Length: 154
Image (cartoon, rainbow, N blue to C red; front, side):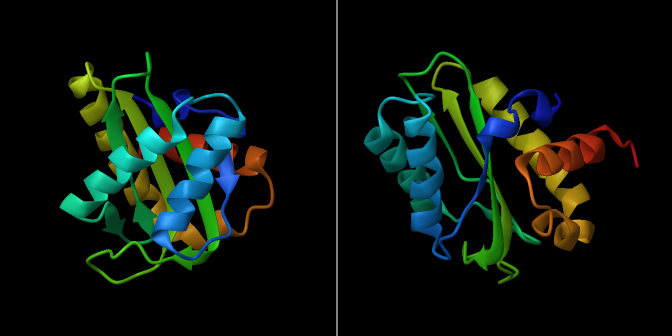
């Protein structure tokens, strides 16, 4: 599964907050403004419940906050880029610069896991060149960069 097939340039956000909770709220609020989601509070509650189980900051500058909810028909993937870095309480204590936010229908757990696996796989490719990612200026540049990385078999 190619993660970049699940989002487009419009679902890439340059986030300003340096705090995990505010960064997640920023992305979810933008999804609501775009009418991609309806129940912002419910989704935030689910994401924060998941964060209570353990940080979704997987380290090396990457976090994959996620949740499953009843009220959506297909999975949503949104990308947050933080130039300053966000403290996601990662095990390696590095700041997070790439946030892959995943919201999936509750009745599609296998697809949810496949998306998380694809996000983790892409994250491994991003880490060595994360500085290049955070210096990109436009959503188009970010999308092309991630797509090329994902399609590179190396």
